[in-house]
Length: 148
Image (tube, rainbow, N blue to C red; front, side):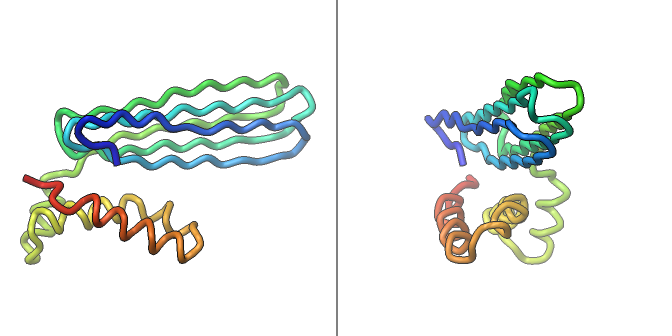
């Protein structure tokens, strides 16, 4: 979570050096209170990495109108039989989502936290349980007081 006064510049690097290799890079970030989150990825296929494939997914959830996010891919393919898929998505919490959850009795803060945790869930479910529990607790702590 990038928040007020924070500039998070994260990234990953993948080098394919053998044939028939596969990689998947998934990045999830949240920006709020004027925070900036950037994600840089570098994927490189060597000439020997024939018939290989890389998939990069960068998703950002922006919680206000003053936060920012960028994705900066640097990819190279030294053979003509490998493929790189890169997708980036930036979204905001919709008023409809907040209205629906708040009409079910949640406060705006609770509704925002639930939406953020749901956004991160595809990532956290892939972690070992002890890490996922710790990350969820840290996210809840970080999100407390994020509205208003």
